[in-house]
Amino acid sequence: MKLTETTVKPKPPFNFDGTVYVPHYFPTPDFEWQPGAMWQTLNIGGKLLGLRMWNEGEIDQPQIKLTIYAKREL
Image (cartoon, helix red, strand yellow):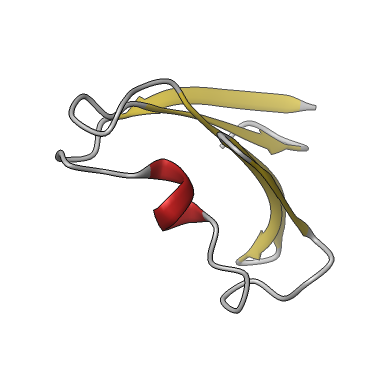
């Protein structure tokens, strides 16, 4: 399994939990959320991916760590 990690810096103000956790957008069993973190699987162009995002910032200094899991290097 290969993984890719990056940091995303949204423009402030940014509320991670208020933006990421919208239950009626992701009513599928492949989405998991807890305060400050989310996990989801995706199928993009036949490539199965796993995503993990977690909050590493604050509303006025937002920072999101993103890890993408894949069978092969992206």
